[in-house]
Image 1: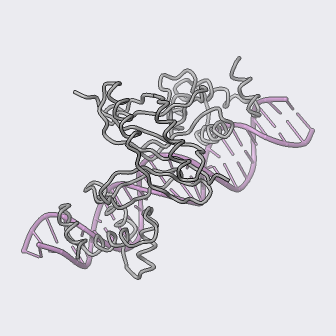
Image 2 (image 1 turned 30 degrees about the vertical axis):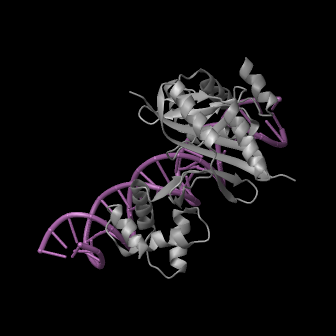
Image 3 (image 1 turned 45 degrees about the horizontal axis):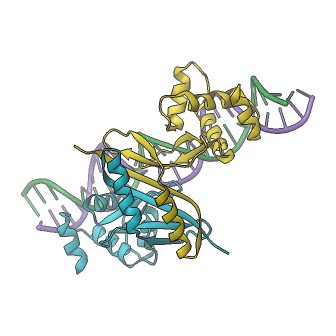
Length: 134
Length: 134
DNA sequence: ATGAATGCAAAAACTTTGCATGACG
DNA sequence: CGTCATGCAAAGTTTTTGCATTCAT
């Protein structure tokens, strides 16, 4: 069971809720899920996990680098599995569809700009809101 | 009084709360203020405006294009006067300091990437989280 | 066994809304 | 004057927290 090692490597005790949540993030159709999404999906799957636990576990996963939290527009955060590589997001304002992309040039410029200002880049957040061109 | 014309041009009735809030956004030290920030600043200035009104007015201002709403990290939205030109933000994770910047190359690449995917760019949100380099 | 994790319910933080009163044009 | 805006308090959302119980090692 791959999930258990992931958890152990992250220094987290292997508990049923944690395993279930990690599996859910891995196997769900949507790659970007809110805490509520995960909670409902677990309920639908017959798993009995508290919403508070979902929030707590997702926050721990984030701290451990297992998932990434995004604050797209609209009150709630969404989480996605940290499948290795970094990428940014395109969100279709009509359909809500989320597309991932990565552009070396943008990444490079960000670093340069920050350094020109006497800082170092810790993290960044880029979301392009788009619409299907007709 | 410049503010009154701004309001009228935006199709908003010129009321005391609206004028005061617009002035506050214009004259406050911080360029990026949350609803709560604006509310407190008004209270400190002896102006008696309800918090609900601040929220309502800021939302109207956003719809009218007078201000821009940002969802930086951490639960609350911040508003900034839409002083014409577009720009992105750098936020210092240690001090909370906000620096504005604009990079033509990044802007151009965004457009290109979106078009390569068959979309058109509606809006975007770029925040660089930085730390003073030592 | 023992310390950490969970579930529940309560609270916290932020924002919106209903409704009676008051202000703008 | 009629209508729209405001203030207050109540309700809504999303997320966090306290505490007794349960679970993993």
